Length: 205
Image (cartoon, rainbow, N blue to C red; front, side):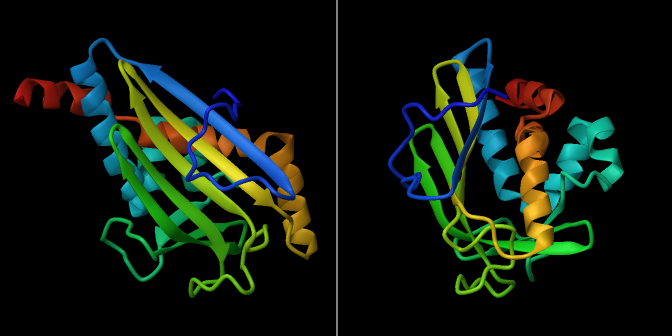
């Protein structure tokens, strides 16, 4: 994935303090029709939080280590084992015997643009004392966009201030040494459309 912070939309919060991270990857398709289908399938994958790990293992089984990779946690919607993600839902991320939580504080729907913005929180969705490596000032925006033949996935972290505790500092260090790009690249792979499903959708239309 390519790192960039150029020409980002206004719904991505302003960077005020702490760290900022931007990880972006683009795929180019052979026709606008194919790119539109890819966008729709990727959007559906983004909303299927409970399937992120299955999708990642299917896309890159060697890198997920059958779900045991410490840089790629188990994602799930709290108290929603089957439904797709909605505004106000809490996402649990379990790794290394620890659980972290983020609240879906905004879903953005625009023409050829979709995004999920999350903020660190506790397991009930409150931001007063985040159960996360970062404080409740931190947000991450998962962005999907299409321009012509190109579909782009972006991860945009803002105001990433490390929470107290040795575990949080160690995780932040690991992320700084390459874990962040690895985990976001893997999640981006999980959201990419399945080539076989993309071909079938073309035949069905």
